[in-house]
Length: 237
Image 1 (cartoon, one colour):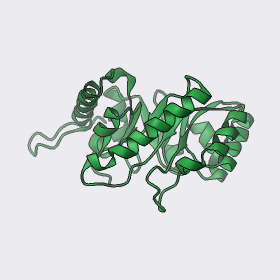
Image 2: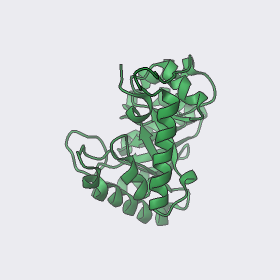
Image 3: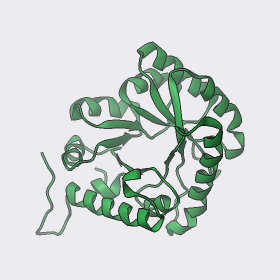
């Protein structure tokens, strides 16, 4: 099933929403002096039905993100081969083995223990996995992520891992009515990435930041991955 726009009500389908998001990313990239092709658009599919995921895939979207391993595993099987799946939500250590089997990229490494657990799980499954360090830039008590000033031990642990490859940083900005209010969060993450890149090498380049309400500001500030749900798929059901 492919979603189509409801021309009678003016409601846009997945394909039309996706194209609008791509155009907004491209304009934001140009404003930031960047190539739009350098930005990976990840469709955030938490609570999104398989039909809408397939519609986005048929419209050319190749990267999809899930928040929960237990929801993702049957959805990934139902969608079938083709997409690259990202784990963009918090990962519990007891779900590590399932996560490395299902996802090509994990965006939410935030403790030494989790990094080591994922490395062991990857070794046991024989599958290398790319990971990002989740940073709680805003210092919110309700959010996961390592504090910017406490990353040294985590970076060291990842450097000692053999089966996980650290490729960048991720953050979830605090909610704000005005996206400009969270620009400093995105700028701080970029500066942290730049500093760590000198230590970890050129492969440490990714900045996963920006969602439906603030992705244009994130792109202007250097995002290489944006995680967008509602703006592509509409409201969750």
